[in-house]
Image: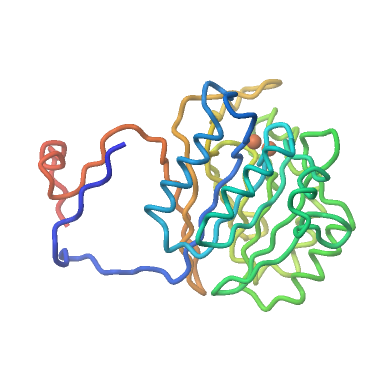
Length: 295
Ligand SMILES: [Fe+2]
Ligand SMILES: [Fe+2]
């Protein structure tokens, strides 16, 4: 992929630098697998490396990277070991959640430091503007998400102790997406999850999830949530599907989060896009911009 051309020097009329103070990266559904194997004709290990390289070049000022589950396609220890090596080379903290394709016990053999209360992979992480809370929605022998009473009690106590704002990260979608085969394996304890969040809703800035391999945005109790597509294989919103999930050849993607104490902005960066990127002021842009954008 060709890098974007630089913008013309000097300020542009009508444009101001409104850079927000906290930048986070959100990767999801990396589905690492045995080297050489592919998923949907794509190499998840290579795509994870490409996503990291792209993000480190374009977003190296991010203060943390969150990966919301389906870290390994088959929950295999070798995948977690390779993941640990890769993220250990990054210049920022990396916070991991587990998904239905993961195996909690195997994951914790490689990442024992992430074992939280009750043996769940849930924990808090300080951010420059508040805190992140990473949740564990894994359940054995199912692709659906779980949020039991023990996890709810921990989250309630954790949120009560944090001043806010809080950015929440989990794997499973906590709200139905309206696509049958996905909603069969959504967070099944969604009601308990919502009830747990309710008393703290005013201090939760945003919920980030994955699992669906679709770009999603919505709200739960007035709390906004979003999910980017995964870093490897992609879904398609087939609203008529009854039993089977749909896939597509859409580009690989990850999320970039720009936040202030009062706002959270989420981008989905389609790093796998193979087409042109035309910077304003370049000959390509002039040729492409038939209608002229006037500001
Ligand atoms: Fe996934
Ligand atoms: Fe998943």
